[in-house]
Image 1 (cartoon, rainbow, N blue to C red):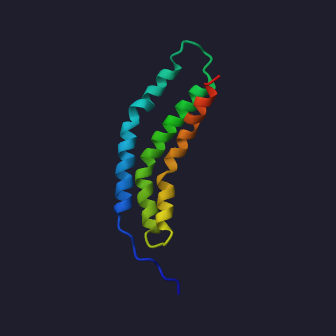
Image 2: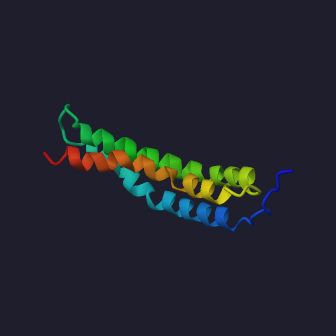
Image 3: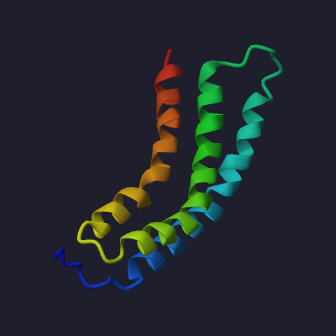
Length: 110
């Protein structure tokens, strides 16, 4: 018979939800300000502008999505021994959306 680990408390999902909700609201203004990147007056928009635009909006979307997603992940894995590792991986997924923003730094360095 396979033994399940004792269920973990909801402290991790509570903290992760609060942190991502705060990050969502703190990143809202810089994300909305990405529309100003297109005010150059030319029709040729550099590639790095699109990377920053979609990277920031993707980050906002994933930060908003993270609040319910972390609770679903916790509910599905709270009795599993590997659940804490899975929650950690899921909690950092929105940071992947910032990769295009980092790439934009190198594309603009020409």
